[in-house]
Amino acid sequence: MHGIFFVLLVMSVVFYKERLFADGVYYFFHVVNSGWFHVEHGRIVLGIGQILPVIASQLQIPIQFIAIISSFGHELFYYLLFLFITIKLKNRNLGIAFLLAHLIGQLWLYFTPMYEICYGGALALVFYGLLTSPKIEDDKWKLAMVFCLWFALTSHLENTVVLFYLILFDILERKFIRPLHLPVLILLFIGIGIELLTLSSYELSNLENPFDEDASFLNLFKPDYLLALFKLFLNYYPEILIFNVFSILFLAVKSKWKTLVVFIGANASLILAINNKANAIDFIRYFESMYYPLVVLCVFTFLFSVYKLLSKQVMLLTGTLLLLCMGVRLVWISSYGIALKERSLQIIGLVDQLQLIPERDKAVINKANIVKSIDLINWALPIEAMVFSSFDGPNESISLVTYDQITYNKKDKGLDTSNFLFREDEIMPLRDLNGRYFSLSKNLYKPVNTAKNIANLDVIGNNLKVQFLASNLEVTKGDSSYFRVRIENKSELSLPSSLDEKIFLSYHIYDSANDVIVWDGKRTPIQIDISDEFHQNIVVKSPDKAGAFKIVPDLVVEGKKWMNLKELSNLNVR
Image 1 (tube, rainbow, N blue to C red):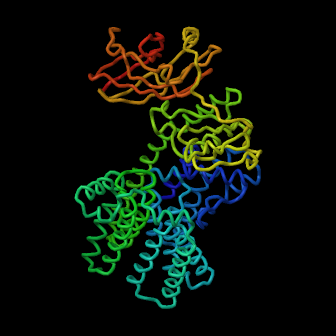
Image 2 (image 1 turned 90 degrees about the horizontal axis):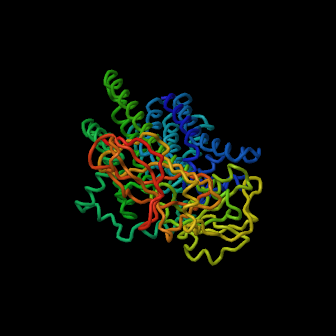
Image 3 (image 1 turned 45 degrees about the vertical axis):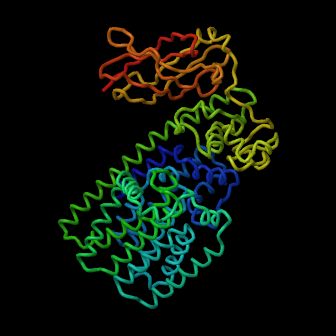
């Protein structure tokens, strides 16, 4: 199990850029820019993940290294808790549950590590370990237990269900221990009351306003909706289904009816609450976080209602299967990281291109020029571009936004030379930037898809090369796939990307006899006016028959001419 954490720690360094995603980059920017902790809506548990980057920023370490330290620190937090559970509390089963809870359901969540619901779930399991440990007789361990309870309680309202379930589970296992369980329950209810009374306007809005207008727990009684929810869990949370089936069966066989009722009730309450707020039947980052407490419930119950009751031989076999399950999840998470690497490379490529253009540190890109959504677009794009560009130094900072973001709630009306768009619903004054890491000029935002050089396209074409980064492309017949190309423009003119110019990236496909199989390949917009060199994805629709082919990327002026570029790659169609 230590080996799995070692892999996770290594992955946190390998994918440190990819973990600067959405909420992750939002909090990272605030910590680096202010040099201090940034906590919102009373979710103080998030401060734990900010300890190392705060120290690093105070030491004025370069921002790229702070990003690595920050990503590593998130995994270090979980590993330290795991060591505390397994070594200090000597609770091996809880350690396995803790590790499973950290892996299952962690796809988008792994790459958005600043999620209070995950930190709270982890601390809820540590709370249970302290609650059931003989060490609890010592006052300092009581204080540690209260600390874990409070941090988990204030992390997210859904985690109150997890905490309440863990306490009831212990009561049903060991009977009610008045000096222990009564104060804990009182503290839990006091905490819930304080949490509800101190909800921020954002949290109140989340409670009062559904994510989907037609969301209702009554949807769970509709066969089509229930089937879609089942398919969601089957595709992305198969472990939850398996663990829950075994847990329910074992609890029934052992006649632990009260525990079974509490377990089903806890799961049902979460599923009802989540689906009353949203039609949570699609796999998106937000729903993954909402369903995370179900992961904690299922792995805990499996380990303490099934696994610990098995014979040694069966326990050994089950333990091997659990390790295999963890390994599969590691591969699954890594595959998401590889896809997200394309995304971070795309943003870095865009800011690198903008750094070549004078007075374009505040830039607006046309969303229609981006054909693959994972390449670029989310609400945190301006923050991500700012952080990635600042890896090259504060004077290289770039604020990159889309037209949709700059006009969101008419934000463009408030933008001037003294500020910049921090994110689509927030404008920040330039004076608030920490000059050690970030710097923007007093310019207005300028579009980056405006070059009008079509009349000089032949001059550009004579100095242009477009080449697939891979010399061998593997595709399935009839499928559309994305491949990265390198575009080199050695002329003094920018290659225009304005959609009005109708200049697109495309390709030709030839067979082994150099006969044309596909001449008019699918069109891909050029993402940005290009000077020097730029990398981006283009879409390729493969032939309908298998075989070995050649593919040549090219540039086309729609309805007028091809540039007849010559760089070829192998295309192997399965």
